[in-house]
Length: 407
Image (cartoon, rainbow, N blue to C red; front, side, top):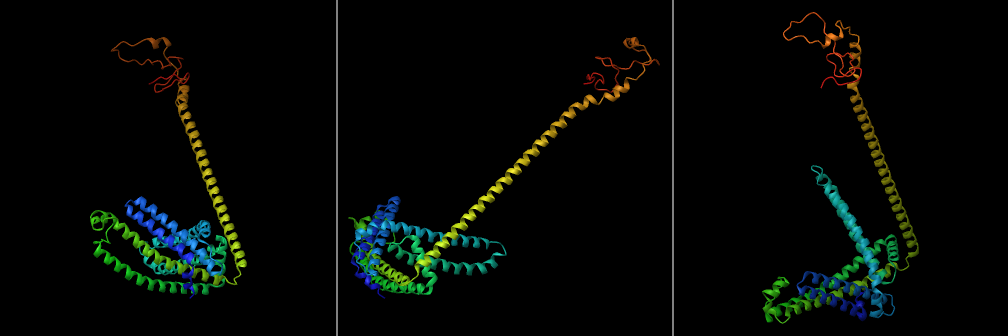
């Protein structure tokens, strides 16, 4: 209930106001340029200015919550980049947690596409994903709300996470109720304040459209500068956008001041008298075990990869040896087939050598006259024209010299 004291910290309020107005002006210039690339660059620059200003104001609100003299804006701003880097590291961790939950949820929902079984799976998957999502998002919110003030105080990211672990392990219910009460109070104040500011803002816009000309609020900047540019000439379109941005930047200053100061008060109350050293030692031990398990998992994966590579190499070697053996067998079969025709006629030729010729050798050269009737005189056995060894009529090769007798 003391968050209203945040409006007394003029240095922090001025820091927030300058950063919010600067972000609004940069975003307005980017949108008014009409070039998407320039608009994105100017909006990114505006976010960086807003983040640096919020971190600087957070350090100043932490000084106020601890009862110390509030730091000047320039020294606090000079120390902000390191805090911003630590906050970005915290955002990466929280983003990784949210992404892991989203991947698991997507995998489970994809399994629910199985025909017939998907409906049964959804009965279990929907409650599990809903309540696990509540735990994940609530954990992200609590982690951010309790770690950011620790970073404002100047602690490292590991120290901030150790304090968070101590708070969650020792005072979980109190932390949840404190943050819930802070959201309710800040939300109520912003709702009331935003209601009055919204009434005044839209009344002013209505009067401006009646006096300056019709302002097509639902149109894009290109249409406004094209078809309706004559209704608000002289830079009034840019003035309308930038002025509106400044109005809501001031509303953001009030909301940011109440929220940042409330987080600082909640953080100091929850960590008061807390055994942070024991929690930090337990956190270090948990980190060491996590690193050891990660190293073991990496070594196991590396060992299995090596085993798979060795098995693949052995299979490739066995396949190569089998291919070599097949090639050798095929070569041996081809050689034996090439030698078989020369050896096949050997036995018939050897038998033909024992044939007794009844006619003298000179009769072989004597040809019977044409038209003469055959006689009972036996003809001479055929012989090889090279070695004159007797051969059979159906021999293809000579049994003595291997000369080819038939084509």
